[in-house]
Image (cartoon, rainbow, N blue to C red; front, top):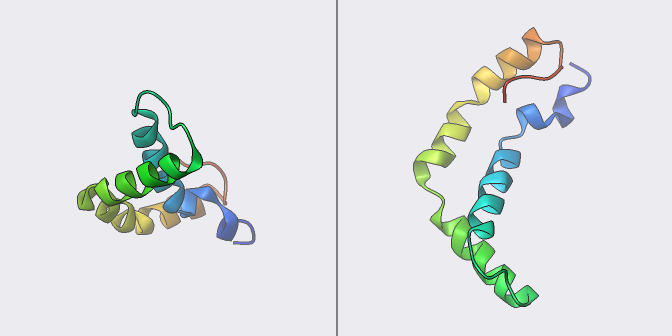
Length: 77
């Protein structure tokens, strides 16, 4: 596999960033400064349920299988 080492399909942190982004965007009004944004990011990072993180970790085998099956192309992940 030449390409998949850099594939977001194999990188569960991309899904974590997406979750974090959704959580921070739920704050209204938007952050007024960088310090507040950092505070919210840390708060939301710590608030991501353990089950969500475990699911990302446990999905790695299937991610690899699908990536191989698609010759490194797009997968459902």
